[in-house]
Structures are given as C-alpha cells and as structure tokens.
Length: 224
Image 1: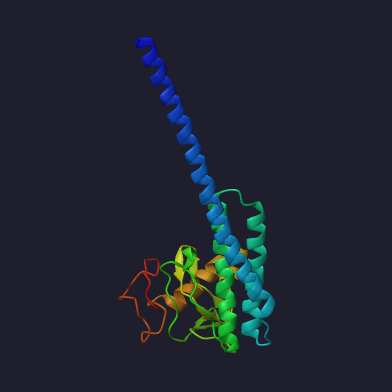
Image 2: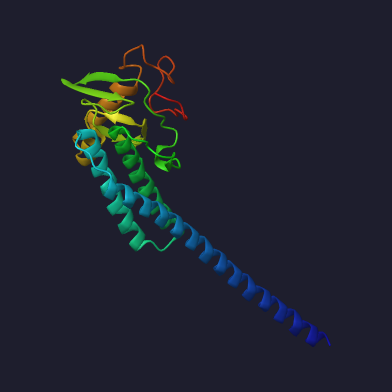
C-alpha cells in the first residue's frame, strides 16, 4: 500500500512538473508573439510615414533621412530577432524613426499626429523650450525647440557620453561627429557643456539647473 502511494505521489509530481513546463513554454510563446506583433506594428507604421512624407526644406529632408535609416535598421533587427529583448530593441528603433517622421511633419507644417510612446533612450532628458546659441572653439552652435534655417537637425533626446541631451533642433549633428571619431569626443563634450551647462550657457536660460549644477546629473522630465 505504501509503495502504491509512493508511485502515485511520484506520478503526480512528474505530471505537475510536465504541466508547469508546458504552461511556462506557452506563456513565453505568447509573450514573444505579443512583443513581435507590437514591434511589427510600429515598424509598419514607420514605413508608411517614410513612403508618404516628402519635402524640400533641409529640416524635412534630414528628418526623413534619419527616419529612413531607423526604418532599415528596425527591419534588420526584426529579421534577426528571436527573443523578447531583441524584439523590444526593434520596437525602440521603430519608435525612434517615428519620432523623426513626426519631426518632419512638424517641419512641413502639418498635423504631427498622436503622441508616441516615450523612448527609453530619451527618458529624463527633457526637451528644448528656448533658442540657444554658443561659440565653441571658433564655431557657432545653435539649438531650439523649432526647426529653422539655422537648426535643421532634429534629435529626439538621448545621452551623449552619459550626459542627457534634450530633444530639439540643432544646427549640426555634433553627437554623430563626436561619436564617429575619437578626436571628436572632446569637441562633443565641449559643445554639450556650452549648450546645457550653467558654467558656459547664458545666465538667462537655466531652467532645471541650480547654481553650479553638474550637467551630468539627473534632469528628470523637465524642459530645457
């Protein structure tokens, strides 16, 4: 009798383990399917924007070039994705592309459409609310909340060398140049300091900063 009970107990344990593994695998499959569908949805939406938006101004053209680059990158990521994390990366790339497409719509003077989910890479970086102009090593750099002749490069917000760079329009994509060459890193840091640090920026524009604040600190979600 005791032997029979032991056999039944073992069978129940094995059956429970098999059921748990099957349920766990099913949950993982559903989760993977959900994130894949979500990433695909944003990717397809980005494709529609890239195909249908056109403009001649430098700001529009540049924003669409950046959107197109993200579209191609997201497509490649989707083709290679096998895990939840990889599909989430593809989703983030597609959303970044849509941020550029939205910027192109703003530069075109048309309805930018609904707000997008926040970018993980732009969390806590804020956005520009006033125009700025600084001189670094004999060169003039501008930034502002709206596109213009002097600020045709949109940036959706992110971090450069660990420092937050707010979303807005810039006179040159200095973050790309700095990241592309080791010698440019110092220049990029100087530009970032000049544009956003109270130690270099004009004293009339220090929203979100305290006296002597460290630019490397957390800005939260405030505007700059």
